[in-house]
Length: 78
Image (cartoon, rainbow, N blue to C red; front, side):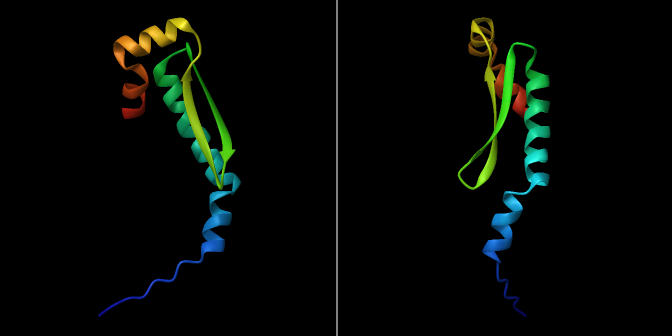
């Protein structure tokens, strides 16, 4: 038995641009920032056809901390 799946590209595109997806990306981005600490910042922007979140070092102290301890990598891991 085989199943044929046809993806509606327009519907997927509108789903990726929906407020629900942006809210979920924001929630995950803020969770990573909270695990990383107070010296880290976060933002969510629409880049191309979907929202993308970024967590970044906010100052020199955070850059040193991240370089020594891989803080952002550990924060993404949960």
